[in-house]
Length: 127
Image (cartoon, rainbow, N blue to C red; front, side, top):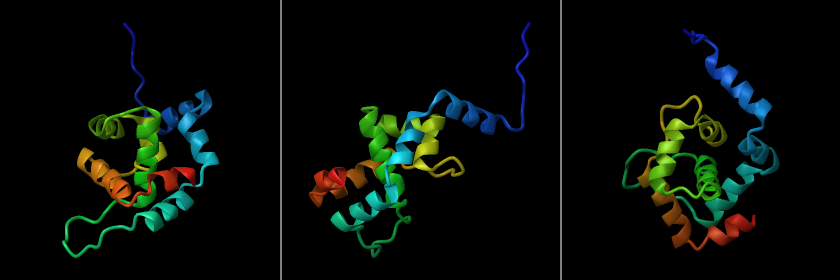
């Protein structure tokens, strides 16, 4: 009967293995300036005001990264929400490894609607 090794460093060990195998999203992150893309996004489609209250919005860069992954893997908003909770490489790329807060399907949809209403999608992906 086999034994599964338990390690306090399992998370780091898995990430190291992902890097060795070649995480395509890590490579993408090396070549795309997502901070500049987020700034372009906020300029093209300004964030709505906070007058109505509600929880603070997630960072634009995180949401832009979510949209990139969603497009690359052709995921619905529901599947994107699930994959962000489940998949290590997606969490790492988006910046959620240390966070218990991940965008849900409504947050993803609302962000996309903001871009569509501002007519900003082409401008952002050209950038």
